[in-house]
Length: 101
Image (cartoon, rainbow, N blue to C red; front, side, top):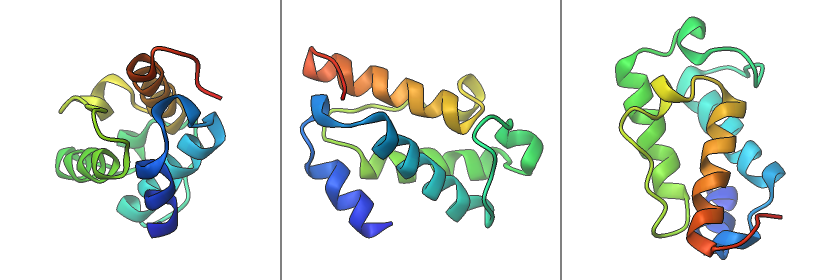
């Protein structure tokens, strides 16, 4: 996860690909939950509780380019790996004022 973190944190926001963000989210979710998950499964139904949601959000926040702000309610508003990935891409694209790769 550290290599993924270093690559994403050092990336220009508009240069992040969907696959790199999806990989980051999937690896971070797996780390918090302790197992692989289907990217379309609701995380709360897989055992993620509110404390885990905060841990996951904070871990993702720390690995994203500076200026990317994730809401405290991230996992409640975007309950799947794919939904979180889409939200993060929209935020980094907005930061860059362009289009993500």
